[in-house]
Every structure is written in structure tokens, then in C-alpha cells.
Length: 226
Image (cartoon, rainbow, N blue to C red):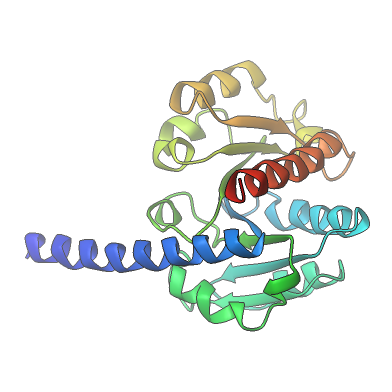
């Protein structure tokens, strides 16, 4: 049965990738910068995304978010406090988001006037790696509480990510976080990844992170419309 399983999976991924390419082209034409946030549960993904939405709104950008969870709309409710439009996807057991799930939610967002769309994927370091969602930026989040070996244990995610956000940096000392080993491990898997060390509790690194997002959108927009 294994060859049959592989064949079916290949067909499903091919269909997903075709839709994702179409969505990416649409996003670029509209000037929407899309990022896909992937991490394990409890990394601080929602907290960081909430402050990111607030700051970009404060800077005058139009932003929105799509959130994936197995159950409940708790994260969407949290993010909506920022004032941004948010859509919740409940996957009911599916361990990742897929392009068609994202496409169905787009009709509920003011895409034509949006500058940034953030996709908060289901908390999982494995399954989301294979699924293109039409994003321009894939972001892996790694909290200091998880240990420095996560990039080595889950190379698929870190190898396909453009950015690594090291979160909860305020807890580094308490957790005996080995910063140098972590940076070395990330760079050994993906030497081109942009790395930010941030804390939503203290504000450490956030300004650089916000500036980076703004600059990346500007560069991508210039390249698309050159």
C-alpha cells in the first residue's frame, strides 16, 4: 500500500501548490504581504502576533490575520482585540493549514485594501512544513523554553523558513538558555535565515522586528511592480 499512499500524497500536494502559486500571484498584484507563522504550541506566537498587529495598525498599515487551531476561536478573539479583521479556521484534528482553507477565508477579509496578512498556523513543527499557503515569508518561532536543539530535531521547518523568531527572551536566564548553541544550530540548518530575539513582556527586539516587516513589504512590492 505504501506506493499508493505516496502517490495520493503527491497529488494532494501538487494541487495545493498550484493553488498556493495562484494565491501568491493574487496577493502580489494586490500589494498584500503575506507571512506564515509556524511553531510548536506555547511558543508565544499569538502574543507576538497581537502586538505586531497593533504596531502596524499604529504605523498606518491595513492588516489582517487568519488563525488555525484544532478547536476553539480563542486565538482569533485575542487577535481581534488589536482592531484588525481576523478569521479563525478550526481544523477539527488536521495538524496544519492548507491553501484551500486560506482561500475560503479571503472573501471575508478586505484584501483589496490590505497591506499585511498574517497566517498563524496550527501549533506543529512537522506537518505545516510541506504546505505552501501562498506566503511571501515563512516564519519559524522558537521559544527559549524549548531548548537549543529544536532546529536540529526539526530541520524541515527551519530549512524552509526565511525568519526565525526566538521568543520569550526575558526567560532566557531562568531556563539556562544557551544562546550561542541555538544560533549555531539555526545557522547550520538555514544560514540565510534572519534571526530576531524578542520578548513581548519586556519589548526586547520588537522595534527591529516591526521595522523588518515594513522594509520587507516595501522591497517585495518594489520587485513585484518593477
